[in-house]
Image 1 (tube, helix red, strand yellow):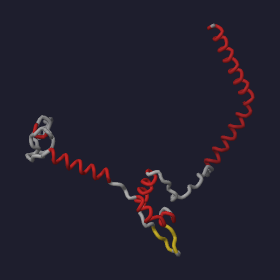
Image 2 (spheres, helix red, strand yellow; image 1 turned 180 degrees about the vertical axis):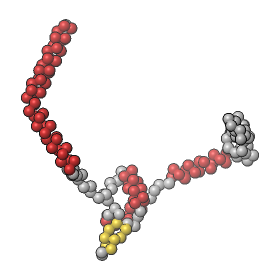
Image 3 (spheres, helix red, strand yellow; image 1 turned 45 degrees about the vertical axis):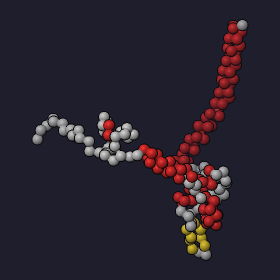
Image 4 (cartoon, one colour; image 1 turned 90 degrees about the horizontal axis):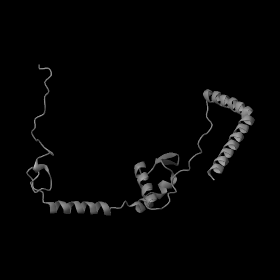
Amino acid sequence: MQVGRIRCRPAVRISGFHPGDPGSIPGNGIPLFGVPLPSAMAGKAAKSVAKAVGEYQYPWQEKLKKYKDDLSKGVWGYWHLGAWKPMGISARHRARLRKEVLLAGQDWPYDPERKEMRTKRKGHKCDRIAAEKRAHTAELMKKMPQMLADYRKRRWEKKMHDEDAAAKKT
């Protein structure tokens, strides 16, 4: 076993693009991999595919008519005569239908109303933090008259400084 010798891959082109090889550059008139590709046929094929893709419209109006009853009963399914009935349309297709309707500028009344978020936290840590906050607020309220006086004094000093600066300019 030889230590310190680095093995390199052979410089033989097996397949794919190889820089410097004129046969691997499309559009230069030399066949790629030995198979000539007429550029006119390739262009027509690309245009027909683009046209087919561009003209396709997701049939959201028909889908909306078909699944209107299911959509109005819920998002995931509904109870019917004591049995759970899943939706007739999958969640992925429902989301796509919703997106297409909204993109078309129509309204989507089938979303369930959202509940209000819970703002009150629970637990011992929250109780401790709330007590600390109340104590801190009480301390700040005791200092508030002095803080307001300092604030007013700073504002007055700034106003006087600005007036002096304006007077010196003129």
